[in-house]
Length: 304
Ligand SMILES: NC(=O)C1=CN([C@@H]2O[C@H](COP(=O)(O)OP(=O)(O)OC[C@H]3O[C@@H](n4cnc5c(N)ncnc54)[C@H](OP(=O)(O)O)[C@@H]3O)[C@@H](O)[C@H]2O)C=CC1
Ligand SMILES: CC(=O)[C@@H](O)[C@H](O)COP(=O)(O)O
Image 1 (cartoon, rainbow, N blue to C red):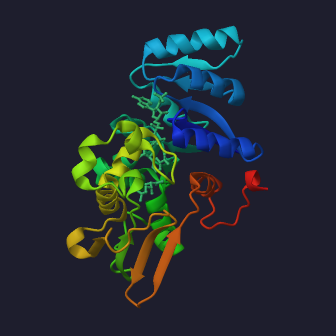
Image 2: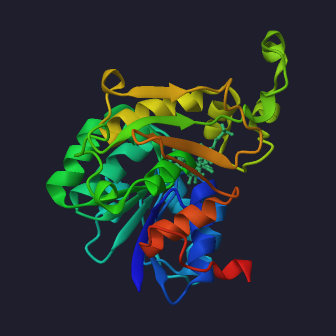
């Protein structure tokens, strides 16, 4: 039984992670949840998953949550200090941490989990974009594991042999025979809107991705294609690849695939190429990460 802390449990990735856990109660259990300000959603999650601890982003949200939990006689301990999320990320009784707080707020709790030597399933792109080298050094120093669970990085990860997967951040992909890596981009909801009309686009339009159901920040990053720049920056930190040392390609004009099925192509020096993608289910990636299998050898029960 793997015991988990979920950072950002009230968000899109967090809720999907809880769906995975709910479908596999014999394999995974929730020890701690961390949310921001969505008190009602957190109360519902506490009622369903009975975590031992919860952290909220501020004391107002924590007080409101304590009140709701008291009414329902739920015993979860609710905290909200400055370091509350970090404390729950490094609990000794926790095996794995899902890092799915959006933005820079996710940095310190994720780093705390790494410093505690946890296996970290990383959705928070921002940590590697801003602090890739620091994070990868901390992974090595503390014997932690970092597994990407956003679609692009997980797809690349799946294309590598196990000896590379186990040494990411500490191995030269060029020396391992990788020639280049291509990301695809769908263009999201604005794909067919001329740039000249972007000024009239509403937040709701920008967040209405035709294929993925994601939080608002990542949806806007996808709609503006900024997400692809983020992803390249993130690769540089995560894979220890400097753009000058390897050919980095992100060619939306060539690989503008509206379906979001193939996310990555890895070219090898021997002319082999490995293509990976997912059928629009973040739950698959989460399950692969949680179950510690590197290939799709586990059958997802909710699909039966
Ligand atoms: N959604 C997806 O399919 C994908 C997401 N990602 C990445 O995963 C991360 C999460 O994305 P997503 O789930 O879409 O985002 P959401 O906006 O849906 O959720 C964000 C989560 O972060 C929490 N949060 C926000 N601010 C704070 C804070 N100050 N302290 C503690 N918690 C906070 C929110 O809490 P609350 O709502 O309670 O305020 C919520 O639980 C992002 O970095 C994104 O780039 C990567 C690949 C795919
Ligand atoms: C689900 C996920 O991880 C996103 O990063 C997604 O891949 C965005 O892709 P598009 O911007 O190409 O739609």
